[in-house]
Length: 333
Ligand SMILES: NC(=O)c1ccc[n+]([C@@H]2O[C@H](COP(=O)([O-])OP(=O)(O)OC[C@H]3O[C@@H](n4cnc5c(N)ncnc54)[C@H](OP(=O)(O)O)[C@@H]3O)[C@@H](O)[C@H]2O)c1
Image (cartoon, rainbow, N blue to C red; front, side, top):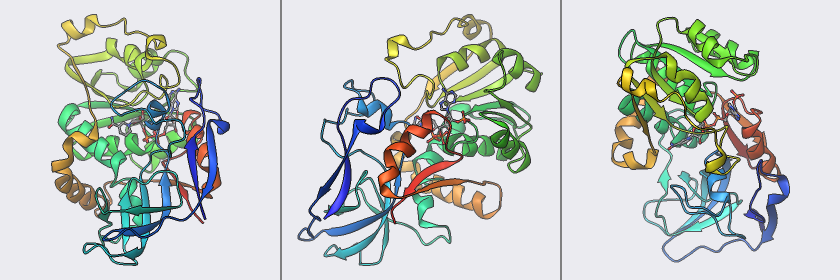
């Protein structure tokens, strides 16, 4: 037998532990020509929140009773597939379950790059790729420009900020609490950090940290954050709409609105969203760049590993209260 978590109930607001049901089901069997994988690390992702509701976002909602979707890294335990052999580490999207059977589609062998296999679903997985394409394609920071990143100590934000620094920008991060802010300025070398839990006027705090204004806003938080930065955007500024942590737990029509849109005209701003999957053909180049920067010590990352499969729901919910410090993964003992 093995365990899996399925969607028991659609969350209302902040997800609750009993929105998820732990089931014990028979181990999958090796499919003819396929492979059998034991998951070792399972991701928890803010974007999953959108799939727990009944409205289509950029991905289909999960059905009640369906296994929770997530990125996974595991070991091949048996294989009849020519591309995979027992003992290989593989990255896939098997979701919140301990074992999975597959025909091999959508799975890749974790490259032997000297990094921990968990990085394949972290800094070299969707979070790192999102930071890479969002910052380079949309933000396009130039040397000397000012870049503001929100949820900056998180998986996506920390990579996005460092990529902007690699491009020669001055980077300021917004994060929750003194420890995260100290990591941004101390370990990562950001020019400044704003503790959003300690400021009552975000516009004033950003104005103080970015006295010349903001050329690029890479936002992971949502409408209220964007609205508070709009008056400070410089001419030709770019806003990367990457995520909406503060808005995911309410219906879209209840999210705060944008009021300061006049800045778009005066400052000739652009605002664009992204989904990392759209860039799949460019992943090899992104992996090469990200790996090179890690090896050169220019791109640092944190993994926040929660021990024990049974803690998946709480690990996920903690993303919305800032419990995690870096890429949150659950390690299956
Ligand atoms: N577009 C895409 O293709 C794509 C792909 C992956 C991820 N994303 C988005 O990128 C963002 C970051 O994802 P991640 O995996 O890297 O997560 P993360 O930043 O590692 O973790 C989430 C963080 O969000 C912050 N947060 C939670 N609630 C908040 C609130 N109400 N106001 C402000 N900050 C809040 C917390 O940090 P603090 O303690 O600092 O507040 C928390 O630690 C998410 O919005 C996610 O949906 C987008």
